[in-house]
Amino acid sequence: MKTFSVKAFGNTKATNLLAPLSINRRETGPTDVEMEILYCGVCHSDIHQARGEWPGTNYPCVPGHEIVGRVTKIGSKVSKFKVGDTSAVGCMVDSCRTCSHCQAGLEQYCINYATFTYNSPDKHLGGHTFGGYSTHVVVDEAFVLKVPSTLDLAATAPLLCAGITTYSPLKKWKVKAGQKVGIVGLGGLGHMGVKFARAFGAHVVLFTTSAKKVADGLRLGAHEVVLSTDKDAMAKHLSSFDFILDCVSAQHDINLYLSLLKLDATLTLVGAPENPLSVSAFSLIMPRRNFAGSGIGGIAETQEMLNFCAEKGIVSDIELIPIQQINEAWGRMLKQDIKYRFVIDMASLKNG
Ligand code: NAP
Ligand code: ZN
Ligand code: ZN
Image 1: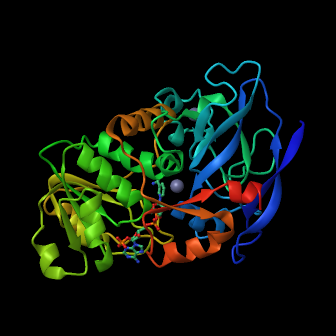
Image 2 (image 1 turned 90 degrees about the vertical axis):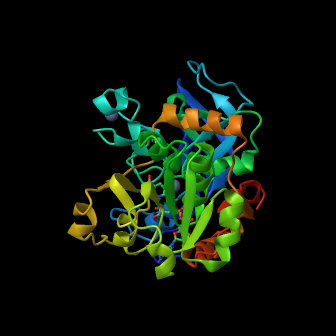
């Protein structure tokens, strides 16, 4: 198969910083779309994966799965896109498309394993897939999203992971007006969770460990912001929530939040810390409570979320950086110093 070489940023082992490297992309096949990447959001999963905090990282690792770009070439059978269109790619670039989960629009849970945008076996070139910290990507059109024309492109990039990962569980657990909904952690996912829960009409309570984020939490749409280190403030919310979405990237006491659920209410984990969380049986038993998880969202639901954002005027609050500042940005994310998603301006890689 013919390939072409593109500039990228990645690391060659877990303990290395990210640095420039070159990777190969396949030439556009009949159903493929080639995109020049304009913007790529920076997800905490990029850090977990590249630093080997999750099992099975292949090196070199080129992260990035919040991709917005412009179509530069299309295959002969492509019908959804034309050259020059704005387009987007999230966490997946393919799946088996035939299993019951794929048929139900839940490609992320493909029984035969979805091909994730980075670190999945590459069906075309062998080796593993490389993500959006690069100048170009080639993806089958079935996994490419359309970006509504009213959305700011850089601020749209984070919707492709942080957006869909929070939108999908709020829909699945039917969050609606009149409900009390908690969002835990004000990072990339958390700030989108606050915006969506608010847009769905819920009474939104943000839990943060960072006193300096209280004002921003309210500005982003929370009705109340609670410092989770304040025991008295936490106690006021015992057994009162209809739904809680946990967006925390590191070790924390999940029982603290389970105890805030009403009878039969659900806490859904989207944060994916490196180490197991310890759940006390009685946090779930008394009164009967549910503890669940959720992974990104399917392709159709991702398009639905993008359209919803265009309708409601929702985008991410971002800090735009050149790729040369990526290691510094990761350092800041690890210190919870984030407002509220870094997005890489990929012109810095093209011209750098
Ligand atoms: P992020 O921007 O770095 O935000 C994480 C937030 O978690 C921080 O801003 C902080 O919020 C809170 N936090 C961090 N360390 C903490 C600690 N030790 N104790 C308590 N709170 C802490 O990360 P992100 O990109 O939103 O990702 C969050 C997690 O979701 C990551 O684990 C990521 O891998 C995972 N993820 C999962 C999916 C999925 O499909 N399920 C998709 C994308 C990402 P405060 O300062 O407000 O406390
Ligand atoms: Zn992500
Ligand atoms: Zn499948």
